[in-house]
Length: 186
Image (tube, rainbow, N blue to C red; front, side, top):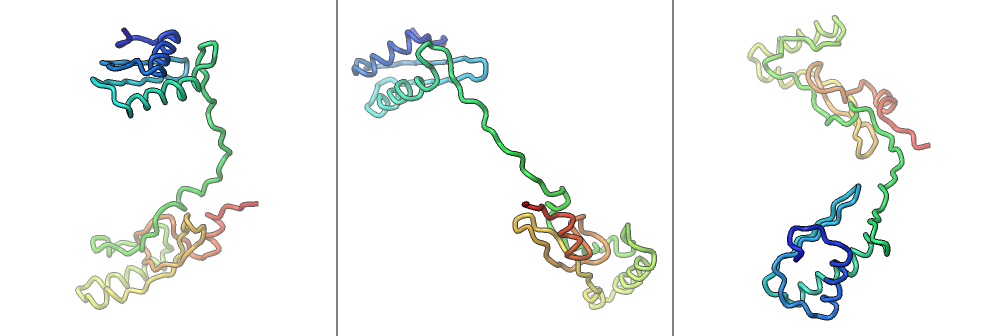
């Protein structure tokens, strides 16, 4: 009777009465669909023998859930969308994970973009000296102290970096880091 069709309020009430009076012993397939302008509610139930937990579940659906969605006149009532307040966001570079800025071996002989010519020449010399096969010298290339912003703690922390590699979450001073990434909570 109800298979694959839209169930009317009369049919829902008939099913409710049958469940309340325990006159349901076998249900092959019930498909209830409530279509509104904003939402489709579907429930598919397939039992060959109704056991007490299944009757309890059907009662719960029909006696508790459906009345919340259907007022007395039968028109669907749905809650409005949740209201959220605007949330401040950090600039995207502040979410980047800290990277050490170590120069990969393939790019050891190139200067980093954005560095000053004198710094680039000095770093090229250091890196070239270290890349000439002396592994011990490679390990002793001086690291620069840079600061990265941690979005979880909303603080800036120091880390060691060379002049190339890394990402934009890398600031010369802690003050620069906080100025760029800190959100005022006033």
